[in-house]
Length: 163
Image 1: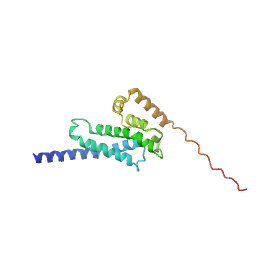
Image 2: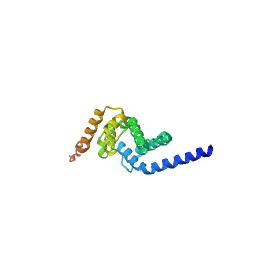
Image 3: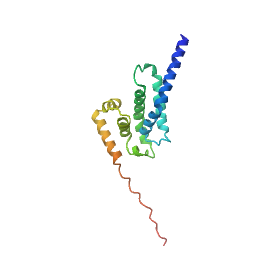
Image 4: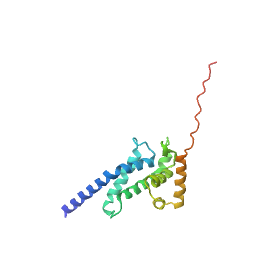
């Protein structure tokens, strides 16, 4: 009995390691897009991915034919959505890059829809939003990314001649 449990545990670990080896790069990129952090400095994205992968590993035996990538992406999105407002309110410096002009909900929906290819209906169900809301937010986010707002003009320092 004990040998059988050890063998099952080893098999589970090998399967999960193979999944992580194949999917972690793309999932980290997705998390980095969610957080709008630079790819080479993305501690929030890495923390999100670590927690999502830990959840997937904990439920690995209960997947029963369910796609582990899909499950992990769902966890990633839900964890980002839960913590996004808190982190958004705490940012001293807004996130940078092309997606940095979007609010967290816009980034989340845009990344799920366009980068991950998740259908509107699935995105709406995952986030608990009406399909129309997902569509509207996605269209607004795309318009913002394609035509970003102009940065406020920074006034130049005026030199005053000594009198």
